[in-house]
Length: 164
Image (tube, rainbow, N blue to C red; front, side):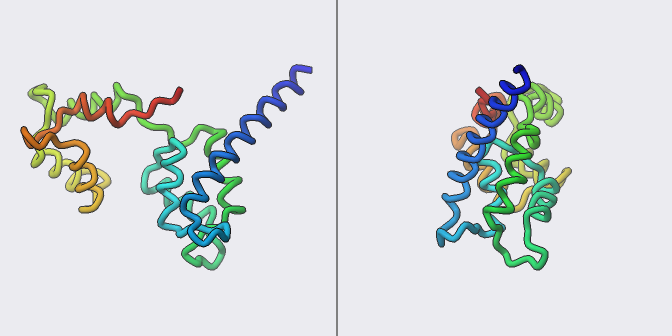
């Protein structure tokens, strides 16, 4: 009896995931032929509340691509892999306190902000570097134009995904 209730609960969750996945996929299915440009996959995954690294995104694409890559991903291949990702709660966003500690490492004087130049240096020269386009997108959201700096507590609050 309990097993049956668990299975029914899982089926409801899976059905809900399928609905969300289809809605997200359809936004980028411009030809309405159940395919999307492979370059849109990261955006679709992120719109579903997941935050994969570039490496994880590359692995995901490799899993859903055709044997002979066409530049397009078919919905039939995307759906089961994305459903598994959501069920396993993969690619979860980083917690707010972890983000704060990361910014604090970059701000040893504990000023509560980083200058635009400091941020650009860290994001383009350290770790997995941001592209120019990614950097411009981040700066447009993060930098206070009056002070030309980022108050990282405010930025973290804006970035964090509410999982409720």
